[in-house]
Structure formats: C-alpha cells, structure tokens
Length: 103
Image (tube, rainbow, N blue to C red; front, top):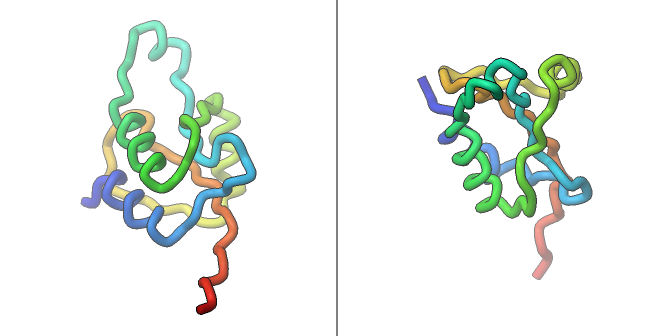
C-alpha cells in the first residue's frame, strides 16, 4: 500500500494548488472526544511540510466532520490509498495550470 505522503508529494508536482484562497488544503477536524483525549495527528505535520514545499503559504484548514463529508462528496476526484493514519483524509483545491513559458 502506498502511504499518502508519497502520493501527495507526487500529486503536488502535477497539480498546482489554488493560490487565490487562504487555505487550499483541508483535513477533518478532530471530533470533540479525540480533541479532549489529546489525540495526535502526526500525518498533518507531513502534509504541512509537503504543501509548504509546493508553495502553500498557510496551514491546513480544519473542517468539521460532517462538513468535511459534504465537501468530499463534491470532489472532482477521489483517490483511495492504503493510508491508515487517523485523520489522514485530505482535500486539495486545485489551482490554475499556468501555460508553459514561451521562449
């Protein structure tokens, strides 16, 4: 199974993020019980690192659980991986593919 971090790294080389929004990447926010327990989400740090390398200027948007599900239903594409990290789902907002520079 391919970990999402490797897949995300490959996707970000081909898919530019939307530069006209503050938060072009979103994860599902911790539900109250998990937040109270202090559940850690180390995969988010890896996402932030990879998104930063791809030019994202901000952190991940944390979206309430059911709002995340609704947003995911409207996604253009869904990629299933073998990722098992808790709260590892990620939504990306695609930007404009810039025309190649003419020389």
